[in-house]
Image 1 (tube, one colour):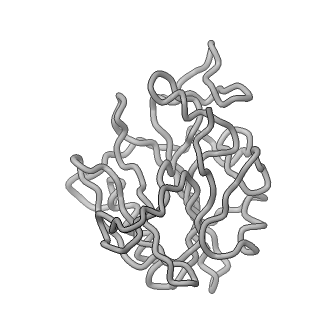
Image 2: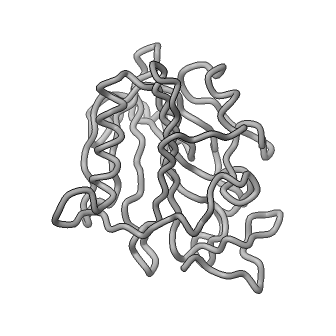
Length: 222
């Protein structure tokens, strides 16, 4: 069964919060043009072994998948019925070469060597230049009368599952689907430059059927 409420959130980043091994998500406060606030929760650790998340960044990303994004309204846009002109699919959309993905820990001593460092670097640029953020994943909320647990706005709502959402097995198999992968695209309008951030778990398969399930002979990400 595909994930529910898949779509893309368009807005501006205003604040971030580092992930930790206890709470392994990098948190970003996003605001749209109507001043509606959202939180995007980006995984920095897998619950399955191996725990390090696979990471890829495209500094000058070019893809047919981004051509319609500037026409979207700010806020959350649902993506239904395997919509390949807007939705992301790491495999069918040929968005990246999986061999370019590298496993990174949540937090590590030293500069620029973990996911917190990577996310903080790009989101600081986005905040400083007022770049547009497109976050693909599953929406939660609005949670009426319940403030966000990290940034305190009400009602709490946002985006999670900002990673590949197919090729799962076991407990996470229920989330499998095609054209519903998560990811982040940053549009630096002054430069007309796009930065893409894609994430996957090492336990996921990159050979999936039309339902996003791992094929019997599928290889796993190494």
